[in-house]
Length: 128
Image (cartoon, rainbow, N blue to C red; front, side, top):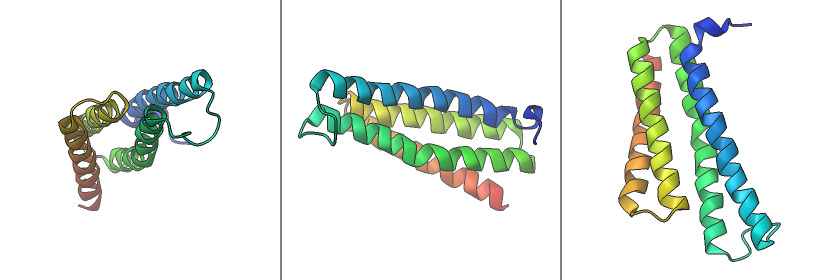
């Protein structure tokens, strides 16, 4: 077992992203309950947006966490890990908010740019 002191940055981001996952899941579940749509989106645009916002989060968070973890284990400087993890986190919040709350499309675009940029940077750091 890896001592948590060796992966405290990964643990921090995993905890934050885990809490966000629960919140995003609850937002879908509670909307389903209130709108009485138990499967699919039932043609409800609000539910569809919440499902996709949550789904996109789930599609990107695991790879980012794996890359943060591997870079941390390889000894990448903490400041890079905090910076890239922070960009990923803020970008995910911007993207989620744009989809789930119908914010201007620029938030979605910046969210994806930051998400893909931080994942790419983490991948490059790992490869060097």
